[in-house]
Length: 405
Image (tube, rainbow, N blue to C red):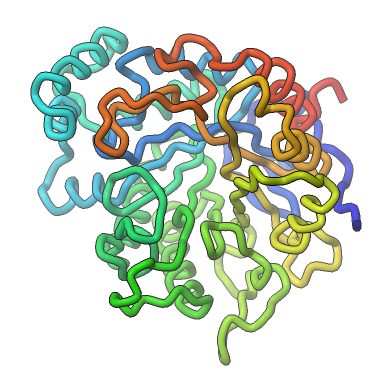
């Protein structure tokens, strides 16, 4: 197996630097031109209520402090196009009180709203959903945590499958024009967030299940739409890194670093794009059935990590923006988790684990849904699995960021 590892960038020395970030070959670089790597966690904010999760149990400062205390340097904050549609089509955002009652019903919604306000006394009574995002970004800046915005879905909901209407360009809820508009809006709005360094174009593009819709996922359409989406971000906020996800739930990236033809007349050539020094590839991995780490590493290099190889046609930074497992003492020692904990720092690759959330306001119709994959417990107070954090995640964070090097 070929090794792609290079000298580890020690961010214990670099510390916190505001942007803008850029890229240099396979590396992300900060405003001083020094190499940097992401090591962080997903904070869901794209589900039904479109309010970032957990605030009925904890304050924003307390949650961000937990992230900071284990050494992470970034959050992947997810959002839905539907929130921006409400703002632009209706002239204003929705107050969180209204959003909670609309989604949870009057009784449950009022209860959750009151708990959120009690935990977050700085919130105005009429605070809107986007203002909650603002508050998270401000607290992250205060605690020196970077923010990466991820467009998770168009219609707010749990993600993802092929029949949710959010799967591919032109799907039931995936209005391409509104998606591009929303990317530009969030990029522009985020200019005031000193913690915002990067944005994803779209989470887990995938084949639509219903063949009657006559929507076929293909690289040609991927290219046209993703470059147009990147144009929207770059025009609104040229400082941001732009993360390109691939195909099949973001597990396939190979044509992007090999320059293989995407169609008869299309090839992904970053040097031809005006934001060439802002492009980062992202990949997801949930291969919990892994039994052989050596084989797993070889597969990752073939499908995505080849972007880091010196002989790659397109040498680009890569971040594994989703990976994770059920937080229990037996799971974190299984081959899947153990292999990624070793492989990602070995390759000097950034990552965000799924997910922070110990519970959701609502998921799949279940109010106060318990998330067994959440790093935090149901009440967002303690780590769900102390060993998973102390013996698994913390050493991985330190290895990724070069702590002590």
